[in-house]
Amino acid sequence: MTDHPLKLHVKTYGCQMNVYDSERMAEAMGPQGYVQTDSPEDADLILLNTCHIREKAAEKVYSELGRLKGLKAKNPDLRIGVAGCVAQAEGAEIMARQPAVDLVVGPQAYHRLPDLVARARSGEKALDTDMPEEDKFEHLPQARTWVGTGAKTVRPTAFLTVQEGCDKFCAFCVVPYTRGAEVSRPAARLMSEARALVDRGVKEITLLGQNVNAYHGDGPEGGTWSLARLIWALDEIEGLERIRFTTSHPNDFTDDLIEAHGTCAKLMPYLHLPVQAGSDRILKAMNRKHTAEQYVALIDRLRAARPDLLLSGDFIVGFPGETEEDFQDTLRLVERVGYGQAYSFKYSARPGTPAAEKEGVPEEVAADRLRRLQELLGQQQRAAQEAMVGRETHVLFEKAGRLPGQLVGKSDYLQAVHVIAPDSLKGQVARVRVTEAKPNSLAAELV
Ligand code: 5AD
Ligand code: SF4
Image 1 (cartoon, protein in one colour):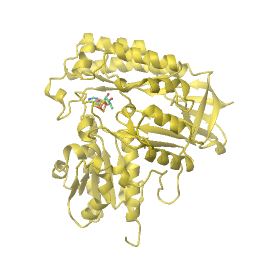
Image 2: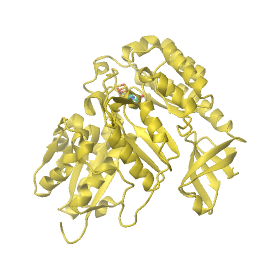
Image 3: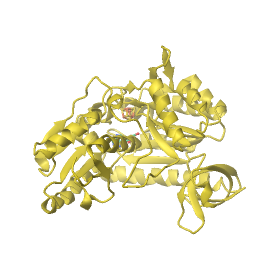
Image 4: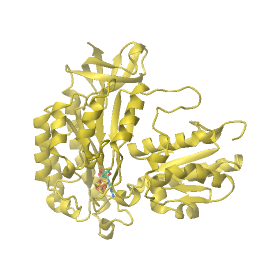
């Protein structure tokens, strides 16, 4: 340790799991004397926690590195590290392409970060993209609401990674290669992490996994827990008010999990359930292993259990071989399901994936399809927002709003809600009536 605290700046790209991992990495560096800083200019160590899912996301990392390398001229002690899925996928190539990078660490090796940083500080180039047998989380400090520069900021919402990796091998996706095989964390460890979060004021926990509903962790007394079993155990934690989970695969939706949507009051009525495409031919080429009809039937069962469920999805347009006819099937599926929220992307060929061998559709065709799909999804989102007006829901207040006296939080359906409310409600759940809908937020009043 040095006499002045070392400063760590972490910049996170991509999914919520990276957000969770970034917090774990920052905590792992705490005992080494590092405190977090929001500004890269002050930092002694900069970590980019990266995303490889689409080409654009991966390229962002190199432009950011290009900007950051100038800081080294001013501070020769500065070390720059690349973590996350680009680190896993590209490894030493990153250092070849951008020599300012001192360390590269893959998602399954974060528990070795302190060691890697020490090596980088002694002037070595440090690289670890192993996927070791041991569970990194068993060697990382337990999740807590993070301690920033000085004051402890307690947030009422937290992520909790319960499962990592993917064995599904959708033909377009890098995740099975960057995050590795599916692994579930033991239930007892998750329960104690959840209890610790709640003790610190957390009211809402979002369970994370690339295939979260494939969760099958060791139970505390032997046997295996399903995601539904875990949710029911979390339901018993006093003080925890909301449970969410993401991201699910249609084929892993078990009966007990569908049922929980109707019977577990703490499980929120919002579900992100990607389908990617609406054409059976394309779904087959994507190796999704389900049809459009099976997906719609699943949605029907979920809605039978929880009629007000708000659905969100992911879509890819322009997958190799996608015809106008196939694309029409996607639009039809969207019409049938009705999404309150959605993410849609142009197909991006990723190195090492099976689909990358095939010819994609012309760029302008994909761009046009994306525009048309987003128009439809946008209409549905606006309709879902409008439908909230006059209805009552709960809001978990997270922070101050832009207007004086205003707080902002999320509804049960994960919509952002602005409410004139006393500061004492920060971190609390309150009942509200929605008065106004905008495309991306709602206004409401306390009831
Ligand atoms: N191109 C475009 N979108 C992709 N996704 C995953 N891989 C690709 C790709 N190669 C999308 C999927 C997934 C979301 C996280 O990102 O829709 O559900
Ligand atoms: Fe990627 Fe498919 Fe696994 Fe999701 S289920 S992470 S899209 S391979």
